[in-house]
Length: 175
Image (tube, one colour):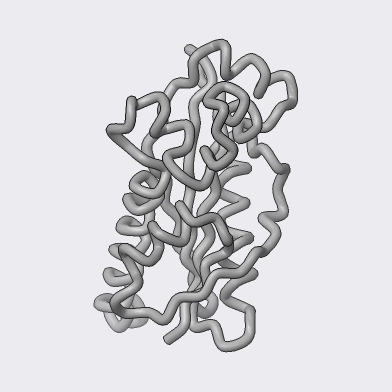
């Protein structure tokens, strides 16, 4: 069975491969999230992941599509990074969120002024590949967590939801 990942970003593809790679044949495709380049809320970030997953599930040969989306979300004490994933199989879609981490004010301010987090992080770290390697989460956790690991956690949640559904779909139909 083929699962198509809605991104060419190595951090995202690596996360999906770590969780789904033994059971699924994986491909990646650059698909539009349908949301802004810098999602500014949990809701928008989640919607981007869902739209990527659905778009991938409709590509030729796909049995499933998976979308992973990174964004930011405001809370009472500042701006946090947020990450969402979605898995689409047939007409079913599951979504899950990952950890959140408060951005320092000197990073949050340009993002709140309209800049994307990726370019802000590239300027701060002087690393062009920051969004495809450890990401902001890796920088602000001093390497204790990577972007791929954070997305891998979300993929585990999605895999678990899918497994639960597969095991219990007959019971659901009987209710």
